[in-house]
Image 1 (cartoon, rainbow, N blue to C red):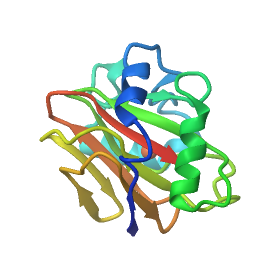
Image 2 (cartoon, helix red, strand yellow):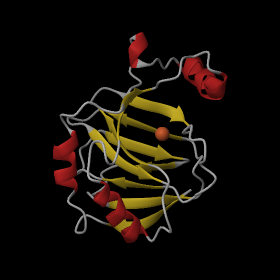
Image 3 (spheres, helix red, strand yellow):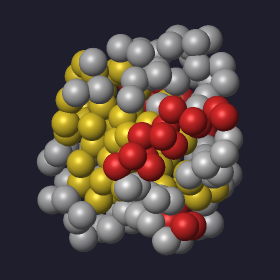
Image 4 (cartoon, rainbow, N blue to C red):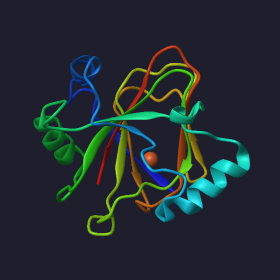
Length: 174
Ligand SMILES: [Fe+2]
């Protein structure tokens, strides 16, 4: 389950952040793991069963990851942490899905996810028809810039797709 936190669009200039990262090389392009990695067997089995394939195998599963400090100002994270009332944070990133691509159902593979179970995401761009995020059983579309949600569990299953006309960006933190 996810719960609404609020809107931070008046506190953080997300347009400036997007401008800053949009032409940069991402930290990595996912998915990174091969099908044979036992850590992702539960995800790989699901993808194979339903015919999803990573972009590097000619499929449509692909996302890019940008990091604070390397790709955008870490002060953005500090502002967000204050806005969301978080006690601290251990990991933050911006994800991008290009039109025509998706992030099929998965659980994020973070190692210390239980240390700070306060996972939050924020829709950082203006809405575009065709952008979809599903967390657990909640489907989010047409989210205004700055809309923010807290997850009941950092290891919730989630998925996203972009059949719109511009990249779909999300800020993620825990
Ligand atoms: Fe994810």
